Structures are given as C-alpha cells and as structure tokens.
Amino acid sequence: MPTVMLSAALDITASVKPPRAVFVNFPLGHQAGKPFDREGQARIILDALHLLETATTPGTLVQLPYKWDEGDLLDSWEEEEMRHPSLV
Image (cartoon, rainbow, N blue to C red; front, side):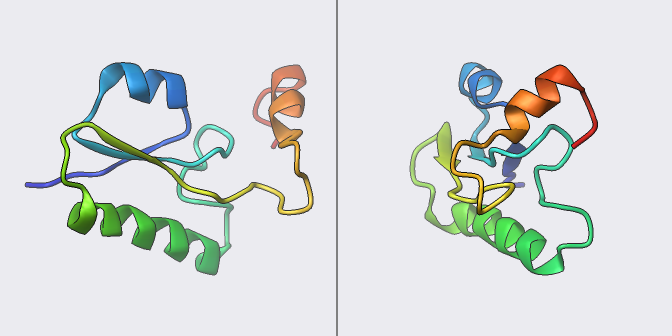
C-alpha cells in the first residue's frame, strides 16, 4: 500500500528517508494545516496525494510552499514556539 508522510520536521524526515514525504513548515502537530481552515487543509492533503501519482524515486521529499502566516515572510512563529512551546 503506497503511503505519504506529512512532516513538520525536515531534518528528521530527511534522515529517516520514508518512501514519500511532504514537508510543511508549520508548527508541530499542524502538518495538515490550521484548525478549521478546510480550504488550506484540502490543498495540503491534495498535494500529498498528488505525490503518490508523481513520485518516481524512493525517498522523494517535497517541500510544500505554504506559510503558517502568509504575511510573515520570516516564519516568526518558529521563534515564538521556541520561547513559548505549544502556544501557536
């Protein structure tokens, strides 16, 4: 059965080398998107499923272009999460 891993930890995923994975630079536990954001969640899931159709090499790791906050070009949620874990 083909699988796709949704990852929020790029370095760990690259080390583990699952058969197929998509990386989303979102806070841990939110790989499929923000709570109640059905449109954003659907985009992420559809992108992950698309990888099942397009991946031709074992260990394919795709970084999705989505941002937790589109207005935050520096992904400052990462800094905030380090200061106050799980408040994002």
